[in-house]
Length: 247
Image 1 (cartoon, rainbow, N blue to C red):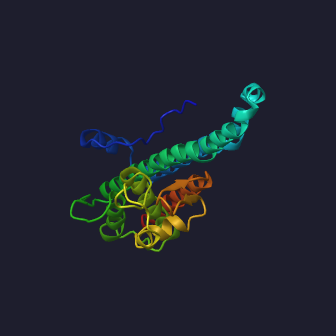
Image 2 (image 1 turned 90 degrees about the vertical axis):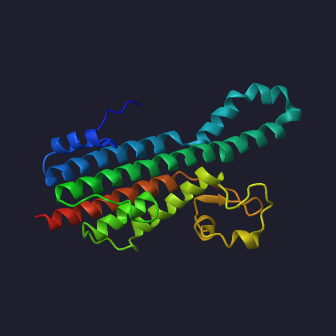
Image 3 (image 1 turned 120 degrees about the vertical axis):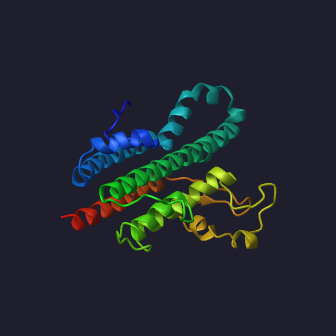
């Protein structure tokens, strides 16, 4: 599906950003544009995830297309269905869901960067996060609180969820979806439980965690749909607080 570019796309280069900043008008106008684009973009993600990740239907289609093979090779029926189940229950969902989490995490980070930077400029505050520790999203969060005085508690449910999803993303990208420090090791459950993200992974109802291998898989698209809700509500909270402070 083709999606028209929204009025606010990620702009990282300073020269382009300055031109963009001059074009968006005052802070109130920017927040309106940001909110409208956020809604359109989240709807797009939600539509794609909801409509394109039906692995049960995909499994049934695969079986249906191979009815003749099944009929002609009765001795291979068990092997066929084992393969089909593995592909559509584990392998494909793992690949697609993991890729989508990485995409949504990048989307959130870029959106957070843009929102924080524009608010800083429009309120005559500097945007210097180099001296802050942590991930980029943690730096933006600290900048909101410390420099812009936008009070969002660290125990905000949406923020907690977003941070957890960012950690899961990092494990997927940097450690091949595993809690093992050395991927060649055999998993030891007592060692796995010492991992700082063990509870996050093992307690998530949408993640399948293999304690024998240390690997985990995002098995349910509701994980991604809930992430979209967290992103929406988190940004909505920021926008509402900024609008209230600038009335």
